[in-house]
Length: 64
Image: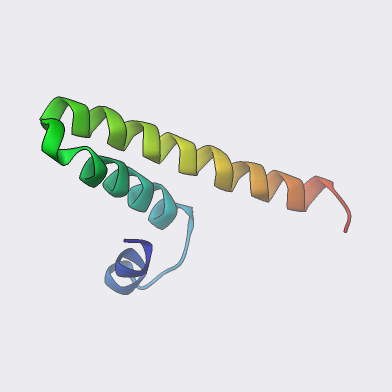
């Protein structure tokens, strides 16, 4: 999903990752109904957003 977003938007940023997480979560629970898909999509998007933001914070504050 993220590669598709990069191809469509022609840029590689955090938005692609968050939308890909949202879409993946929604697709994973799509058979359980729209409400479950929406909840899973929101959880997936939030999880990816936290992970990417944490990675950027680590890169900024931890010298390696």
